[in-house]
Figure 1 (spheres, rainbow, N blue to C red):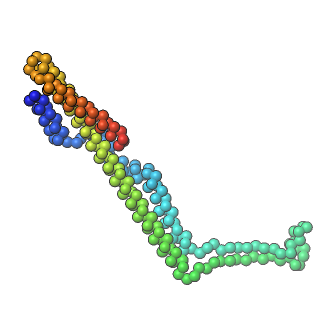
Figure 2: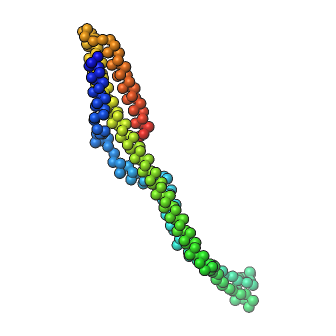
Figure 3: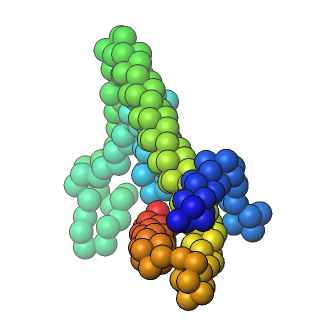
Length: 204
């Protein structure tokens, strides 16, 4: 019984004292994951494209409309389309240019700049939310990795303890109750491992 309690206390102490560390091959750089998320996130891409497009508008809205040039002909003979056959044939060219009311272009430009600034803020917000999501998933997975590592080691310890209690019982120095308690604790740890593995897959 004392050995069972000692093993349990050692397991708890080990869980509390051992730092959360993951083997080097399992470590992914948080900075690289954030960079990848910001680069590949469809949400970030959409907001970035919208921001870039809106920053093109201030220059466009302050410019005058393109002039319109019209070419025309009247009284042109349709039998041979000879421009010089009849004196009544007339050719003309007209140019039209819309000139905005003074100050309108400046106001349109200012409004377009404010709209582009708003798009920048939206992009910043979606980037912040993306970074937060990556960090949350990263540290959740980091914790699960270490919990799996510690639980696996605790399972090995408990298996050894189960064997020890069974051996002591067989030689008449132990109680069957100790075996049952050790087996229940082993089952609990194995069940915990299954749940951790499921959580790991979900987070990944």
